[in-house]
Image (cartoon, rainbow, N blue to C red):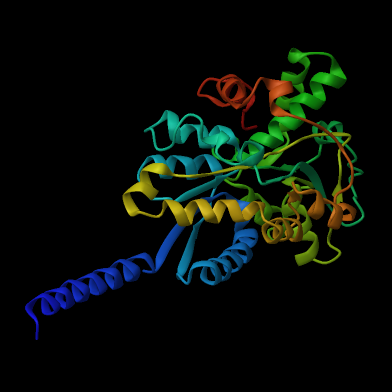
Length: 337
């Protein structure tokens, strides 16, 4: 055989082998870890299956998604302490900001990388009572009455609990006239708290399964899940004023760059904004952000007056420092009787 042809064939063979190796490497299975907060367990169990099918159809690559759940603040601390999350889907932007402030795991502008400040769905805070509402609970004022037993998680560890606290605070501030009155009101509310669990799901268990408390201050989606699971045993009370809860999502840059999972992790979060992702959010009682899904699920979300964290508290950085930092207002008002 002509030496030139023989050499050309060797080059071609090496090129084909190298190309095959690169293609194989590109299609190697990927595992993501989504570190989230308590009430998203069912949401992401459903969404993960949908994304795996979507990604396989789009790229041919197999991906599996593992979940970690707990109080949002504790989950943020776990990531900072070394839990290798590819994505963080925490209860509030303040917890996610901590990933930047404590270790530089994400950039300061992380919230600008996805639409709607990286909040693909929203929620709010409601009151869950037992069948027939035996204590006649209608609004936040009723939670400070003598003899009312309240269940809510600990705002030192739970993101949902911080939304609860701030919703009650703003209600009192507007109705009673100022910060001092709000501080007294929220102090009285927490003196009625029977059990202060570390996360929202723990409080849900305390109220629904252990039978403690007259009222559970709850994520809206968690309240609907309780109604569905315990048919007829609970009712949802929408207060006259509540807070617009905007859980935010991000890739954890230090992890995805080390593991080489940035493309898949980014696609995972982007899929939350897709028609399929928005439909799954609505199905699990989170308020979708797309007009199409909002229209589909409008009947399950009663209209309620909502305020935002920025307008009422100047954002999460300020609210966290004033209310939830060590020695902050929550520490000042919370006393176990």
